[in-house]
Length: 317
Image (cartoon, rainbow, N blue to C red):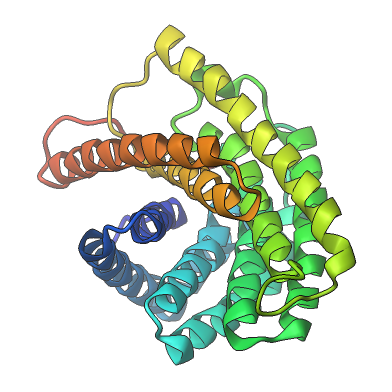
């Protein structure tokens, strides 16, 4: 783990979101396996970067001001949601609290250090913020907590604003040359749609919480707009992958798996909250595509770990 970079945190995000998707589609055993694997990866990465903080503080500081550092927030929030679905409330709350503590510590220096043209990891400022919104709204419904709904709404609005800011700094050439993290451009909209869908569910007057019913209609509309935006990215990115193939393994390929898995989960949740069966069908298709891509990426990681030929990770800019 000596050469581990913060970008490796996307492996936890990708594995965790697949666990959520598998749970939503009824594959509970597979979801549990994915959760265990995501948890093991999270522990390994957390231990590595904690040791680095103590033993190599200067390197830790250099890593902490790059956008991939925000995978620490997003991956922990994804685990919080997984733990919530499994009924482990205390662990879910602890993970969400840790994410909330890390978020401002990492977000502020990352934004302060932005350049004019950045790779796809720039969208992690949105994804990390929206992951907090999703985690808060998930626990809000389970715990019947209205203040968590308000916190989620504030984070959701901030996440949407950060998406616009990230888009302004995104280097469009990354669609052609990106190593995999350029897919977060669409994935950040997917997690935004998921956050909006969770808030839509919380505000449903027929639901168990019934938080501010007047917001139910507007939030449903916003959810659909964001989901449409995320889906619009998919054909563009697929075309770019076919036109300019990037077949060799790169650690940033985990940042391709995560957006696909997140888009699948967003479709599944929107299908339930907005009454759109077609979205559920699309979500199931995308979920299994994401599972297949996860397996391919895991094979690439294993081959590279054994010293076989493979692509080198491009350092984040």
